[in-house]
Amino acid sequence: MTMEIIGGKWKPCLILNIHNGARRPSELQRLNRHASRQVLNVQLKELEEHGIIERVVYPVLPPKVEYFLTDLGKSLLPVLEMMDTWGDQYRKRPDQSPQLLHAS
Image (cartoon, rainbow, N blue to C red; front, top):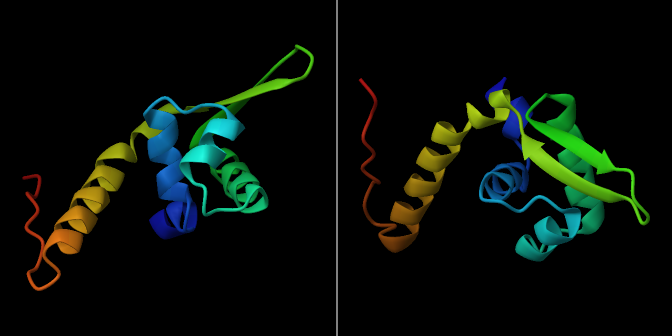
């Protein structure tokens, strides 16, 4: 189930970007420059459908859109941070198994 929700090349990045304060589609595109706008839009929509993020459209011209993590989305942060730590350790020392602290 977890992979159904966050499985997608850009979904973990989008969740962490939104958590770190990038809320506008243009900011998310700039931070994930190797992803097409279409792919990001699809993955943002899927995250919204799963209740991980909330999309807020402000009634101004031109329309202003921002994304926020829901409480459910915030509950994924420890998982994503552990994945990020594992990836950093592996990138630095691919010849050694990453050592992660496990919650007791």
